[in-house]
Length: 310
Image (cartoon, rainbow, N blue to C red; front, side):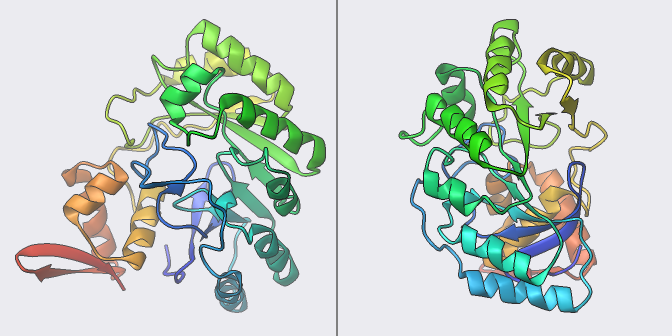
């Protein structure tokens, strides 16, 4: 993992996208949802406000420097620590990326804003869009995704259907399975019906193999996920990485997220545990690894240790 500057991180290994260069274009945990399974922790700014959270020209300049230095990646992925479609300049960003590189653009999104025609237009030039669908009805959607009050389940599905009608690229839909929430027979039938309406090119099943925002989130066993995949159709596959340990490795997404967070502001161990849903032992392991590699430093201030990115 390399220091990629203010907005870019990685490339990181991704089961879906190969070597993925992450692009972080909104503030940490600025989102339309507050999903109970989010590995980044609880949403601190739940909003529908679209604005230019970071300057598009600054992001493109940083990417250009990396490309000139010989960057290799399979995808440039708009995602990061918040919901990227909240950025009002995402269309200009995608167009700008296309002008300076042939590396395909992926959009990692919760899909909640595609009911807005301008958002669909803004994202039309992406090569692949990876939205989420974790429920089959309003009640389950509210429990699992805890949306902004103006986001409804019907609005989410209608937006994804509209995207499918207009968008010419690939749609890879992720379903995050949580035991006791969305894996019973009736809920899966409703999810399957919604998938038929959305008509994604692929369906990816995931579950809680990493720390989550809420402690009562229970992962679904690999065998059960395989059964669910068969129920949801021939284009459905399991992407959950069951070999990942709870203690994040240096190449893991949690390390990337932690490093990205420290680049924005210094944090204490308690800050990190709260934001990322880690216990102190796991967080300390990640911090020690990053510090050994010279990517972060620690400093004691008034009897409290804070961590800074180099």
